[in-house]
Length: 265
Image 1: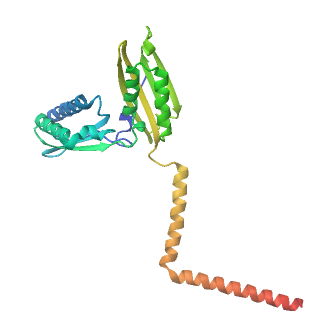
Image 2: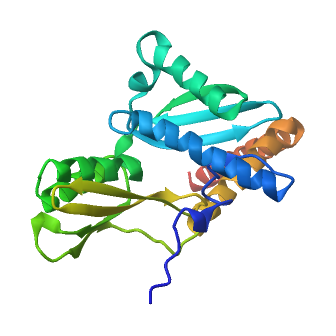
Image 3: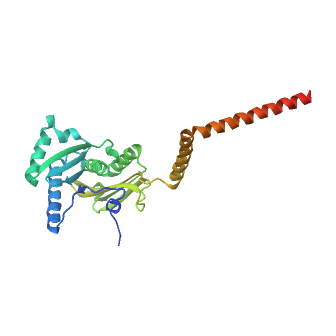
């Protein structure tokens, strides 16, 4: 029996941050606010699921207002012409939550490094009857070319329209799932094909949050050298004494060389 841990939930509070920022003093409030968060995400995903390229929806609650941040690779589609679609969405959110709402649209600069968007891209190709190995391989190549250190993709279902469902896994680079400082992005997507649903899991490793021991050692050495330089700048008398001592030693060396040359002559 597999003992699997969600890569994002495993790192919450450390490398990963929560998708909702609010506090409930009573259990009933917690239940109601959680259901409201789910309704907000369902409303946004249902409206922009096909064309919005939405990665995640972050919710922050104040005393009287609500802040919803939409992370998307296509902000123009979310905003609409002249901001009309944003105004409509804000009105729907205020009607749903009965609170003053504010919308923030964050653009994702590199969608190839976002696990949700990579999974959605693979699902769209599978729905268009593209060979699953080709779709996965191209997605992995684009992710690695964008600067990722590793990616793993698992597709499961009736691959290629086969009668018996199977699982296929492809991996490139490294994905250290047990390392807490590793920044692992994980997502599950579904491709709804004519012969059934194909599940897609994507892991993307983009680096470590905490530097390694060698980097820490190099930084400490740099700090020591910087501290010595600052001490010399703050104490010009010491640096002047050092330079005077150096000049005196060089003068004595030159006189000794001159006396040696005279005795030789």
